[in-house]
Image: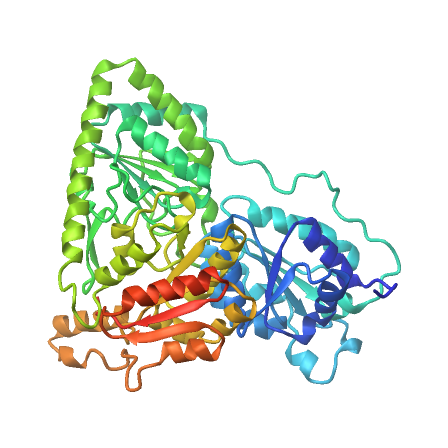
Length: 579
């Protein structure tokens, strides 16, 4: 190793000190100094993951953070790489994913810029491009400013509610020879502030409202971002005999728990109290929507009480409207639910212990909810058998086939839920089974790679129910998976269409009286149909398909799972019904 040290070595020292294990990149000269330091001075730690697009790099870090609870880095080449990654950064922000984004620019010293290329790749305040949807951005001007800004960025990123940060390093700054030691943050210093606890008086008031309610319901959205939140919610629901509606931004509650009422809004129609736990999306479960006319009507009785516990306006942005509609709750408590839920459970337990009538009400409510949940699961099981042998394959048949193949494995589902059929038919019994639903087209595959990467040390079978339209955005990411030997099973949800948008065009046709048979124009992925199996094979995957009918699917799943367990990614192209 060379005796000389370089300014970019300091950045590597910090990446090591803060335990960032991977860095996803698409190569670029603006971070050539940092690149050399990672590979040589740092011994390729963090490990560099080569991606074909900057969006993929950020998405991998997004999925890794969701699945592991810890961050990794994504390194973006000057302003063009940042612009490529914009959408992925936005989705990481609204999904509360802590991604440590490292950028580069310049040189800011005009005398060090190469003709033309360094000028068109340099921006004034480059972080301004992502400022509306990062928690913090900074560009240190000297090497001595690097450690403090790195430490601050990490703390901001990991403080709840979490989100991405952006640190931009001047290209010439990285490449300068070090002539002195640059002190790092103290090894024993706290990296992240403590969590926000709920106001004790307010939590006591919340417990009183819950004890007085006849028909309370819980809505949970980000509670399951930590395993302890998942288990705490089970304890609270069981203590109060309270049904739980899981919004699925994280896996918040076991899918087959008797108190799970997800995917059935009827529970809200006579609710007298709704407890929102770390939930921004309280409106969708509690309203009926006429999509074509955009009319939404609440189904919760007007006199019901509402309690909101979470981060509320800490996430408020003046740029994006992801904070959604303001609800005038009767009680709003600013708190981390990982602390607030156990405290609320103990307060509720104390009330139940001293009130025999309340104990009987809790018991009866839990029994009634369990019976409805059992009946609902039986209905789903019957519905799944309809058109069982149809070709193309029905979604519940595909979900059932995959479940039969993986149910005895230690499995993880990535982002897609196959229009909720996996959530209805599979047993999501552990908090790591599913890091939450996908966010939109062109997000799922990259995020799924990150989820698979996070589970490599645990040797879990990671399954991605992968929409065809989403994969077409970044088919090159297939190569990244094979290149870095990330084992995962991809089962294509291939309806040969951007069908979510096709449905919108059908709604418009019905509303306007235009021909529904023309709704597919600009929406179908056919003529020619992409050959996903051939595509995957060409990039080093094991692949079979397309399967136009369920025949042979069981055996193909067995073969593909064996390949994944041996360390090779595998893809099965299954052609499905539109819905």
